[in-house]
Image 1 (tube, rainbow, N blue to C red):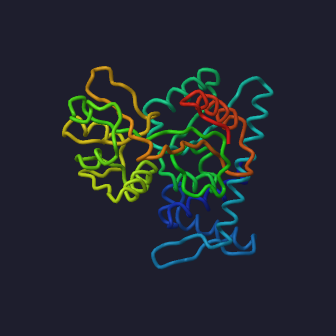
Image 2 (tube, rainbow, N blue to C red):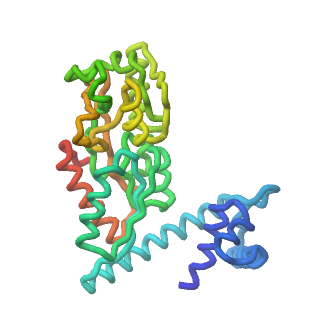
Image 3 (cartoon, rainbow, N blue to C red):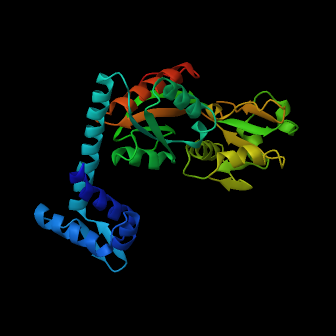
Length: 303
């Protein structure tokens, strides 16, 4: 589809912020890339980039054009998927922006089951915080988002909501492990490991701590939930996670304890897509699979 090549070049320049770097990414000379974009701008009737001393960036006209291009690609993929379905062979690509908690267990299992039925479908999984995931939907960079406690929900069409409490994670020999339910103050008084502020788990922790006139003051703050799960085995610390991202390792090393809901309200894991967008066949069908699986997981609900 040669007519889309120029749009791919424009997208590459927008992503790189530089004609030279985009040319390297697209295996074309910088002068040829610049001429092609200049020629397109002349035909289009407007410049697409602000030329800056340190590179380039999209101007409002360029942002509108790039949004149109991504929307057109989405529509084309939807038609291609429908045509593939006519022949009985589902093809396509599914792009998902998700919270880290979905990576160890839930999402790999769901993707593998779907591909067992439809091996022609490929997947792209991107770990994003809750604000980034919503942005990727709006820019067509992801078809679906599966995130804990999204921020805005302005252009977010909710497909499924799954309540998820934040639980405490600790080594089996931790003094708090003897309790079947913990108070938040007990967790915060102990050395604790917490996610960075941009994550939904930390948002709930900070909000609840302020209500109790306390604060989250981690000995280790991280963007890695995997680090949290492993670090608590090395020091008598408490970590925090949601249940869908946890599984008993089977060796008795870790325990998970609920935190009293009166101290820390339950949050929501939300599956969604861009509001008003007609998804291509493969993402739409996979979204329904995810919705059904989530409904069975801890009593997920329809919006």
